[in-house]
Image (cartoon, rainbow, N blue to C red; front, side, top):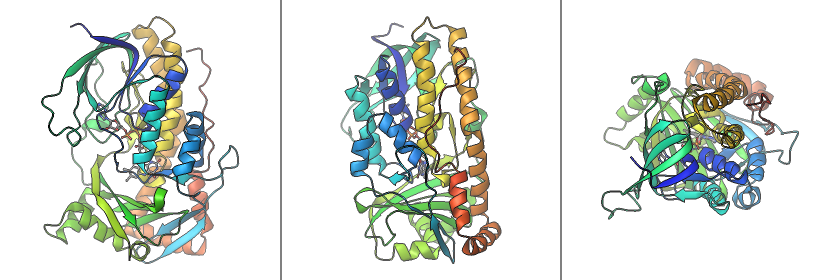
Length: 423
Ligand SMILES: Cc1cc2nc3c(=O)[nH]c(=O)nc-3n(C[C@H](O)[C@H](O)[C@H](O)COP(=O)(O)OP(=O)(O)OC[C@H]3O[C@@H](n4cnc5c(N)ncnc54)[C@H](O)[C@@H]3O)c2cc1C
């Protein structure tokens, strides 16, 4: 099969990971094609909080100023909203870098800013377009891209037209909550993506409200039996409420409201936390509840694979710590450094796998402990006995919340650099 177009790097997906990787590669002089299946702006299930480290990376990517002009004020307080009690403490301050505190901004805005920046640096953006199939070998990948697949934006379009792209390197930034493209690789897909349904599977929900009474700059963790969530005032006074709920807890909450959409059942469960009910007492919902799932936190980065994975496609923490975008941006920086070196030379299986292994090793070193910590914290929040005990402890020692946020990486600067190993 002959390709109609060619590029150095083809990136699948324009979430924060894909767009950031595209920006960094384009700035390094690499020819990049970025493929995104949805038209922007679009909403996405996400708590929409950016930590101080993420803000520093967004400065590096060239969107910091625009972002700060849109985003909500700094997040200065962290909170805990249990069934009965709410506790508030100071947010940990990031001691180094330009930004002491994080901010919140809707994904409709953030993702649009990033893809726009990529475009302005000469990245060829195909949108809406979906990567359907990747085949070939390192240095010679053939990617089938279906154009005009966004059903909402192109209701009247007929069957999508396919383009065939030849790419020397392919980077998978398709996220983790939906099936990615078919990739013909000698290597099997990571086990996490093939696990059968489990009661512990998490489903994620998000809704936006206006007129909430949640204080701007406060980021509470919401803990309820079988799930957890977060709430924050983001840009334009919009309050984002997002949560994860176990399959069994979702079933239980839906049983209490037969026939109601899942989002309404989840909303009722969230409002069983007094702090949520109070903050939303006179709020109005803007748009519908969005949902995704099952989401399965874990590590998927794979140094033996023919394609690179970045962002959630490489690995995912429990959303409770709200570090996914930060990790997406940081892993973009790691992968872009490896790939920009790789495309400077002749690419074959050996050179590509050496670069991918070095990247995967650094990914694990950078994020492995954050994933473990987030899992522990999420289990505490979801189990009523543990959450009750923790709630009592936090009431007497609110400063533990500040420490917990620091341990989760919320006050860490964007200090990741590529280990110099000659690859
Ligand atoms: C409930 C919840 C709350 C969260 N809260 C926070 C928070 O407050 N702060 C934070 O930092 N993180 C949070 N996260 C995590 C964060 O949303 C993710 O980590 C982040 O979106 C990962 O970015 P990404 O670019 O890897 O993937 P995504 O953002 O998922 O982007 C992937 C993109 O790829 C596109 N795509 C997929 N398949 C194809 C294809 N075949 N062809 C073309 N395009 C394709 C998709 O349309 C999408 O735009 C939360 C997550 C959840 C579930």
